[in-house]
Amino acid sequence: MSLTGKTAVVTGAAMGIGRAVTELLLQHGAKVALLDVNETAGKSLVEVLDKLYGRERTLFLSCDVESEEQIKAAFLKAAETFGGIDILFNNAGVLNEDRWERTVSINLMGVIRGSYAALEHMSKLSGGRGGVIINTSSLAGLGPLPSCPVYTATKHAVVGFTRAMAAASVASGYGVRFNALCPGFVQTDLFSAIESNLGRFAHLAAATQQLAEHFGLVGMCDVAEAALDMVTDETKNGEVFLVSPKRKEYVNFPSFVQ
Ligand code: NAD
Image (spheres, protein in one colour):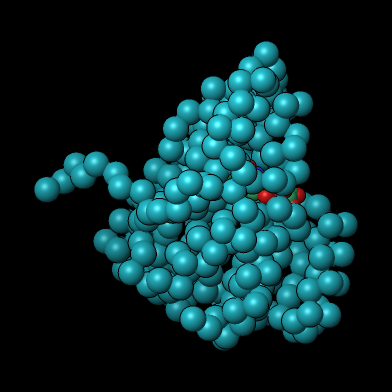
């Protein structure tokens, strides 16, 4: 499906999964605002992307998702530059059990800040066109990663927030779909640095390594394709896509309301 004419905002776009999703969105015709706290990586990526896709299709905006002010300013700039926002990929994240309050602030509160700021531009109740918000959770959003209790908590919370926002959006008439992406282990800087960021759980580093070996590494392309599926399939709202080497599937949750 073509995304020509659509505008996307991607947080944590300079590297890793955010970068892969950004490139796939551009390949499908979207314009993309790349938000990241790492200005050097973000600007040099945009230079590369401009040559491939054209200068008018990308925009780098320095933005720390810990700051509501910076998020609001970046989303406004993206909407003004491209004429609205149709797609948000709330992806910026860290794994740091030592600086756990910052982990909560980025992984969970950053997703909430991003979603609420995006609704100001996307919700049909505030003059937007509607659209879709994809939040990056993790395999650790569906089951425990013993060496990373706070990271696990943030990623479970992202799943819960996404599903509740999907239902709230339908009930309120926002016209915005909400879905969550749950990748297994992916070879990125975050993954490479896990062992040095376990804080009081550093003694569980070997067990984490064994878990990663047990699950295997999921390919970046598979993760980006899963995100794209949730963007383009307009029947998907409140869905959670698990992407691991052995399983690529939407997750079934128990139904509490008959
Ligand atoms: P990464 O470290 O390669 O990239 C993360 C990007 O987010 C970087 O560009 C970084 O500068 C940016 N970022 C970090 N803090 C930020 C902030 N406060 N504001 C704005 N940008 C910020 O990591 P990744 O593995 O690509 O992770 C992306 C997302 O995927 C995260 O939410 C992570 O939790 C999740 N995830 C990763 C894995 C994995 O194994 N790599 C697995 C499941 C889920």
